[in-house]
Amino acid sequence: MEMAIVMARESGMDWIMHLDTDELLYPGGASEYSIRRLLADVPEDVDMVIFPNYESSVERDDIKDPFSEVSMFKKNYDHLPKDTYFGMYKEATRGNPNYFITYGNGKSAARIQDHLRPNGAHRWHNYAKSPNEIKLEEAAVLHYTYTKFSDLTSRRDRCGCKPTKEDVKRCFMLDFDRAAFIIASTASEEDMLRWYNERVVWNDKQLNLKLLRKGVLTRIYAPMAIVQGLRESGVFTSVIAAAVDNAKVGQKESVDRNSTDHDHEDEPRTSFVAANNARKILNVVEPAPAYRDKDGGASAAVPPLSPPGLDDARGEGLARW
Image (tube, rainbow, N blue to C red; front, side):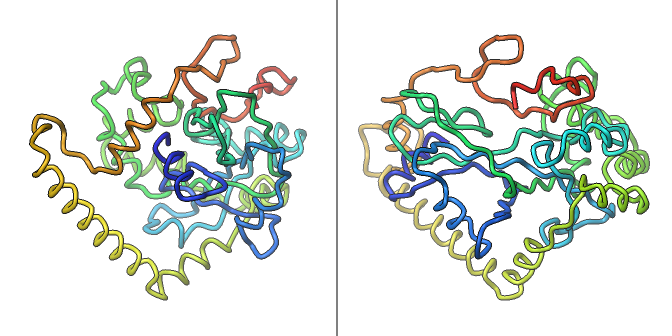
């Protein structure tokens, strides 16, 4: 993210945002269904725009291509009436540790400007001032989490922790991720599939309909249609091919450069651009814990946070949101 800020400035970008490979940006409320238009309408004095996240709610256990097959999402606390959120909390949670199975504090876009720094994957920070931020009322990040059964089975390969409640805390911050790792590490394939259907798959059509009517769940078809269209038109294939070709060119240039740089034969052979940008960043970065947890303790960055729980119904703990 530090390197991306440098590259964004050099490329003349206006905004920067961190998205994982299992996320899409949904420009709800924007004319022309455009991220560019959405951000262009943000007041000039705003430094950071928060996109609350919606979480995928898969209806089958055999999903292969989430972006093309998933249309149902659970809405974020920030986009629901408080009474609806807490009133439907237990039914929406279905026995899981939290309302969302993974994080619930959204992602954010930051305006490119001096002193901009990442504050974890979810927020941005500015060392010269407190960023002026707004939260969008309709747009969201669509988080396609645990959409495939293989997302559960691959969990056991994510770290070397022992499958115990205490040891998994070293590797995973969220309760559901910890439980998923333990199940994936200890259960048979049949038991894992049963657990996956109970905890992840939304196969109770009556409950789904009830939560859809209440607005807790929502249908969003546009990303599915767009991704299917891009795939059928061959855009993905051509982009991937171009990326592979560019990577080969970059590797060749790096090898040629390293092979002629006899003064640094013992140093790691990295790409020139990445190394140069990294050096620029190392010259200006300062340690600045920008997030404080609910007990007032400093943390290195804003972590992935679970949505408000029933203990927060009286307003306790909501300040972090």
